[in-house]
Amino acid sequence: MLTLSNLSKRYSNGHLALSGIDLSVGPGEILGVVGGSGCGKSTLLRLISGLETPSDGRIEIGGSPVSGPRDEVGFVFQEPRLMPWLSIDDNVAFGIRHLAREERDVRVREALVRVGLAGFAGHWPRELSGGMAQRAALARALVGRPQILLLDEPFSALDALTRNDLQEHLLDLWAYDRPTMVLVTHDIEEALALSDRIVVMQPAPGRVQVTVTPPLSRPRDRASLEFQEWKRHLLAELHHSFVRPARQGDERFPAAAI
Amino acid sequence: MTVTHPSDPYNEVAPASLPAVTAPSRRTGEEDASVVSARPGRRWNWLLGLIVPVGLAVGWEIAVAAGLGDGRLLPPPSKIIATLSALAATGELLSHIVATLCRVALGFVFGVLAGTFLGALTGYSTLARALLDPTLQALRAIPSIAWVPVFILWFGIFETSKVILIAVGVFFPIYLALSGAILGVDRKLVEVARIFRFSGPEMVWRVLLPATLPAYVIALRAGLGLGWMFVVAAEFMGASEGLGFLLVDGQMTGRPQTVLASIAVFAVLGKLTDWLLAQGSLRFLRWQDGFNPTA
Image 1 (tube, rainbow over the protein chains, first blue to last red):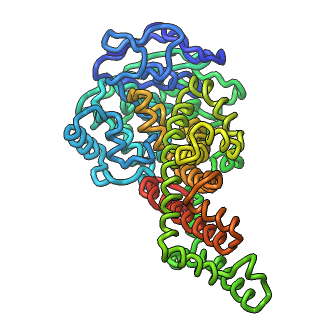
Image 2: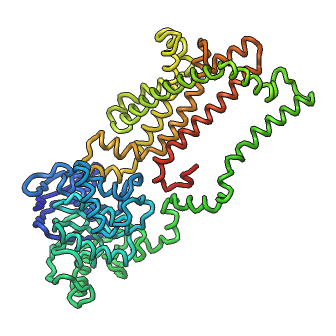
Image 3: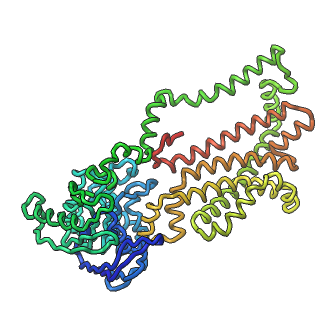
């Protein structure tokens, strides 16, 4: 479905954000990407989405190379990024402007019901809480029925309760059309709760350190011994990968918290 | 958001400085507004605005009646009102008002169209900005009155030259505000539109223009104010009707009450059209999460 080969990105200021990434994501697969700050996770998503162009290497979706944003790729940003001048239903319809009006209305209504915002169609973004705004952003990304959904730390700005709620909700949403998902996060528990496969990245320059496939059954029980065991394992991996430029030797904090 | 993560080791010394990092949000402003403005009295706030002009008028009337002021050079309000009603009775006032309003309206429409188009173009396209902005900025530096002789030469003494002069006055504040505001549109919103593969015109129409609407409305009001300013200049340069003509006519014939009457009409019309514009734009700005969106 999605293939990255020897992907590198050097920004115009000379900073090498990603180097030699090889990855392949299957149809309907949920791939988690974890790593500390500055390991190029977001850059990776921006390259796949076509917002940025790679300096080297190739990205292919369904066998055809990516040269810019595509209809079959949806993106959920860290912030909701709703257009403040559009009501919630118009925001959700923002990306499906080419569809016929009836089709658009049906899809928007359906998407709002799915994300639990059915009663908020006519509200302004400023009237929504952070969690609700992010639900609207999810609806906007899903309403075009993308084959690939890219999520860039989508829940990191939310409180823990809302975050857990939305994580579970995301799986329900995924179950409708089963898009391929690439979920970038710095939250190991989030990655473990959602992903089929997890890529741990290491920084300077960003590259893949290890790819793991936790054999956890779904739905995942976060309190289970197995889950906790995997969490520890991944924390250790991250800890190992993380180079601390300023505070070498300070072991009091797990790197995953960064 | 990692910056504010409580267990981020790189920020464990930072909490004291954290509030300074987050920019003052508009929400804060909203709370201030609810503290400052006395909501129950708001309906009658507009009456407060009448106190100063009415007080001045009454004061002057009394001063002239008491022999404290020179009522010949600065006629009292009663005399100005009498002049206005005399002009209104013959229908002369209406024809002057209509003539001036038509000129302002036409000039405003052309100025807004040109300012919006070129402002959007130079705001959106780097190439257009490099190509056109220096010339337009240089033209902006020319004092408006300097155009009068050439406009008369090129477009004649009648309506065309007047409307063009007004349009020039309206054009610049709109051009300047729009092209500047577009450059300041949140990159994050633009990226959303890029993800959805918006074309250039779609990006301008559906993202850049709505995002700049608050600034645009202010620019429209500034442009309209300049339109009223320029209509006087235009009517000074030779007209047989219009409020500017009435003003010059009053000066030529030594009737200060006529001059002041036309000034008073300018004030009322200027305020009225500005109010209409502000009210008309309100429904497009309801989405704003600002200090006081109804102001």
